[in-house]
Image (tube, rainbow, N blue to C red; front, top):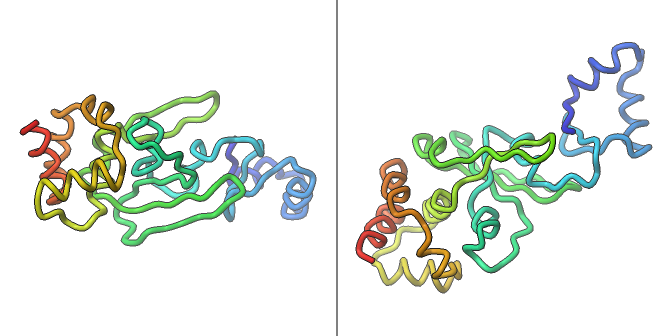
Length: 193
């Protein structure tokens, strides 16, 4: 369970020195530090369940989501997340994993994000279509369809069979929110094929 400093201090209200109690719990393996002011009670909690607690609002996207859906063959160890209006990329290295956060357009942010529940945890993840649009948004503009295909199928190594399962209507809808050459080109490319 994720616990904030404020929650712990409220729970430990009967202790005169709350910080000493927190330090003892960390030393004794009852608490595990995620980032400053944020702790987890179970050292074996998968990192992706903690991503939105570390920095938010955010949802899992980009390479981590693409890998989760089987669109790219590589196993991605860094948990890549989308945020908005933060202005710069953030990275956190924790005992639960490495987490990166980068902006997507504010209008695109809430679209095509799923809420998943696992046990006592919940997290948000982009749909496969949204994760691909988020990724393309971060890349330098492509000049033509050939460059787009090279990026998709050689550089990112997108699985063609999985790519063909993507919902063209969702990508078409999403392309309106990014104001991105790459995302618009993807929508047109999918319309042609």
